[in-house]
Image (tube, helix red, strand yellow):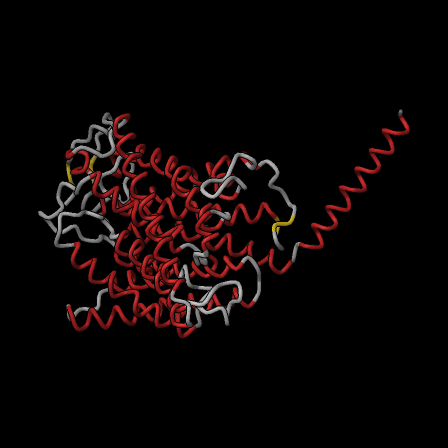
Length: 448
């Protein structure tokens, strides 16, 4: 008996050693290095978004707005490891993964393609984080911070993870043949529609339509847009999951599409408003980045350039129209991300070519009109699911805790009310507190 147990033990060690050797052989050092860099680049996008959004709001809400991005790092990052990753990439069925990898069970250094499984999980986790953070731009300056945290926690599990499974986890849209290289539908249409619904449910800010709600720090906006562009090279290039020609294609397209979008936007500004604004330039960069995301590994560089130029048209005019309505999507998340993602996904169905990426498909321009239909179905499905579940979630959370600040709190600014801190010690919007006062009971004295 002892001899048999020893034999089984030796055999198990040998088998395990052989499996580890096979994993080591299949893991490619170059691919792993590139994904390590890409994961860090995508993570950097969330602080970059904080600066982009933070500069666009009034000074009394700057810190709160930036915190809405930063807190997603903790909330969404934690829940991704606990359950989100398993629901997104577990085998499950056509609509949802399973619990097989909950708490990262079985997710280790074994190979997932040519990179360690654990690294793939982390790379995808950065996408979950930035998607949740994007939503905040529609509800800044009025949504309670605790309610926002609860919302993105639940939303990440019941909206983001299932949609991710549909497209990237082997779900029904993947089986249908939908092309989404780095998140046009999964990230941007998903976040954009959620933002639109959230803005409608919360209602407009108390000063909306009565006074100009101007950006307090436009250099922050430009800084955020520039760092977002830098991080986006990991967002799109890393989605090739290898240091190969497709990653190079995605990188080049991530350079050219925003360049075309920026040029197109400045031309529109010149002829329509006669002012080429810095906020407009920053927005154009983001729209171009959003639009190329689903197409980055499927279209030619010239196709990407054209895609970027075309993509600004619907977003530009929607932003100008929205400003004249009662819809207070504070930072135009739907116009930039929802519509930008929709435009990019549809143009992918037109411009994609299997000649440049055999793993993709031909689009309408290359003789396959059916791909455009598939892209449209994927957009509609994600938009409908995201919109309906977001509405239900917000209504449910609203029954448990208030979603938005009251008018007095909005007047004082969300920085002092939610955090007991201020972005700026002096200047417009700075509140003077007595030593015996709490952030919830400020005296409201404003420095001039």
